[in-house]
Amino acid sequence: MEEREERRERGLKRKKASSKIEDAKRSARPELNNFGWQTLGYVEKFRFPPVVDTIERVDATHLTVDQFREKYENPGVPCILQNAAAGWQANDKWTIERLGRKYRNQKFKCGEDDDGYSVKMKMKYYIEYMLSNKDDSPLYIFDSSFGDRHKTRQLLEDFQIPRFFEDDLFRYAEYKKRPPHRWFVMGPTRSGTAIHIDPLGTSAWNTLISGYKRWVLIPPGAPKSLVKPYKHEAGKHPDEAVTWFTFVYPRVKAGSWPKEYPIIEARQGPGETMFVPSGWWHVVINECATMAITQNFASLANLRAVWPKTVKGRPKLSKHWFKRLRAERPEVLPVLAESAPLRDEEEDSSDSSSSSSSSSSSSEDESEMEEIAARCGVSMRKKRRLLGSSADRSTESSESPCASKIRKSEERK
Image (cartoon, rainbow, N blue to C red):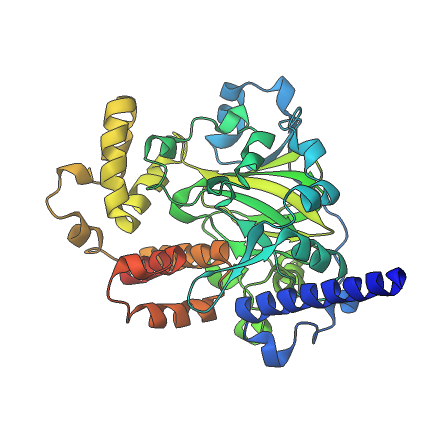
């Protein structure tokens, strides 16, 4: 009798989990509701390309901050730092079993719906999905607010910003005013992020706790038409890493690939920290179940790119940020003056920020908008629907954070 009751209870739990997973999938990618999540059969057909690793690796324990800046950050050279995460509690605590116990009933963002609101799933349901799904391009936890929630903020104690990236100039802005910059990342094989350039000219670091990631990085200046899937290739997965590796990667490896855009490939392993300089295109796909932490940052090395993009894209933030930098870091003011007008001294920042445009800046805006969409788990098709739905809202405050960011980016064009 007890055994039969236990089987019944397990069955009900599996049914509930399946229902929660399906609800999240329907909300995050409704375009697949009729097409199907496994239609392309990538669980059987997709093959990771042979491992090619051309990135430079350096032992962080034998590298000073000044050496890192001179050799990698200032010239904008990607690299992988080894042992930068040595001693992190995350190395022991961030396992599927432990996270599944400690955060089993906590919800993490794994996408966005068509109205721009977060699609979340409890950790216990996501782990079940991650370990058993056969989807062509699976849902991917990419959560920027875990540190703001009472029951998940303890994750912040499990890692430290590597010393090479501690001087983040955005830290001088009030926390609530700075753009999203920190993500807890977790996903199964074939999940990942589409080709993109990080927003606002920022650089990024990504530390992998477990699993393996494949990276392809393409130098700044490569045209979007060259690095993106063609329209006829995009299908139902235009903004997915698996699509890029299926269609674009073979072109990147072909002899006809422009020599002026030499790619860098990497297979990132546990404990390794990827450094992505400002302006570099990059695409990432998970070989297996992975967990990582990643942050974007502004520094002295990329400030000439970050400041004008912030002035143009976030005029209110730029005024606030300028005041804080003037008080705390006056030595950067000449860099700001060389890069763009100091908006603190202008009477109408919003008008002037949108008054000038060119074909190149339009391209940059589109790339930034795509990155915002990618970070929020929104496809470009969904982005346009999102803009339409948010246009009828009476106040900006009624929009979701992602809808507001995408709308502002669109208004600049």
